[in-house]
Image (cartoon, one colour):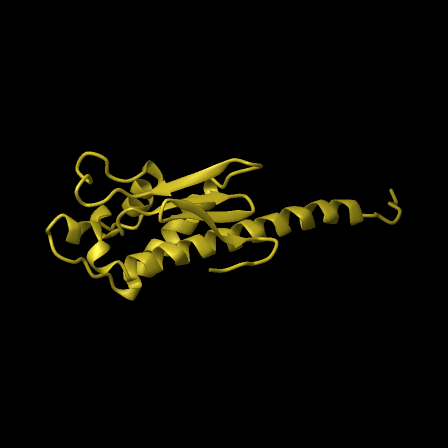
Length: 152
């Protein structure tokens, strides 16, 4: 049996589109992970533990890298499609015992073996399929878009 020349351009095109979307998703999630890691690193008096009166929890670079890896892995698994979003938020130290943090962050912190109280307080982030918004002084503000690569 002899086969003729096989054209595979259409199949490769499908894989190229999927690979491009995966790279864009990963770029968005990487930015979000870096944003949270910087917020943890620079939380100071806004750290949940400090606001609860328990003192500051200092994380090493290795622990921050572990957090980012867990964050990226978890969020990529649940990455939103279309106009949907993922919302990540923390309460402040005063209400932490009653309110806590969202379930996504609980799972990320569990996967990275870090305490929830090392997170910064009063942060809210929305991750969409093409952008990232945060709440800044009760205003929703876009800090990253995949089209313009806007970084704040």
